[in-house]
Length: 266
Image 1 (cartoon, rainbow, N blue to C red):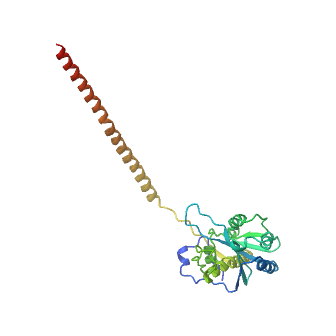
Image 2: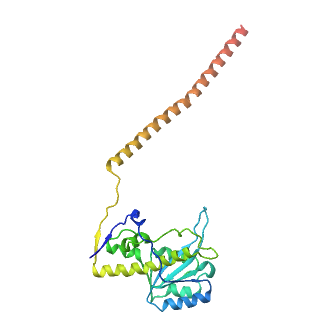
Image 3: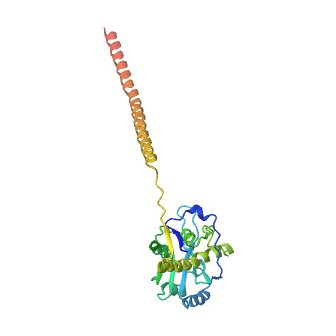
């Protein structure tokens, strides 16, 4: 039986889906020595899922550098805490590697964020957003794409948590690992579906505003502009009236004074 996928997945349908959990090991990296060993291990494989996390900003003008680089193979995820280690020579070597495939989503944005810490020459990266369109999928978010292909929900509750906290919580670690590991699963599934054509695509049209509603909205806007113009004209007219009245009063006073002076001379 073919898999049914949708050009656009309804976000409301995601709520009741079973939540994804990461089944492998999660290892946190906080020193340059640990980073060296982790990179050697990862580069010995054939594929990696990658993602980054940054402490959210809640005040105007506030900025933070990327705090976490998560890199996973199919069973182990390493969390490189860049706010503690920065980009070490080993991490730079991983990012510049051209042999092992690195799968991400909106990875171009992640590269820009990482380069705020240190410039590097990006290696062999694949962006899932550049691949899903070949299946007819229009959605670009990780959560929607994963729900569409696997009918499971990636929870985003930890996205706005403090990624520079002294110690990451278990929930943060799970969230970070899933984001990286799920990229590998999606990559494998997209390639499988492209090769086998074992899917049916349901094209979901984009929601449109009814023409009647558009016309009513436009009519209200025109009507509002006319009323505002009429009110403004009335205000301007009222504002000019006192000036003419004041000038007439001054003229009358001067005429009266002249008349009195003439009578006195007589």
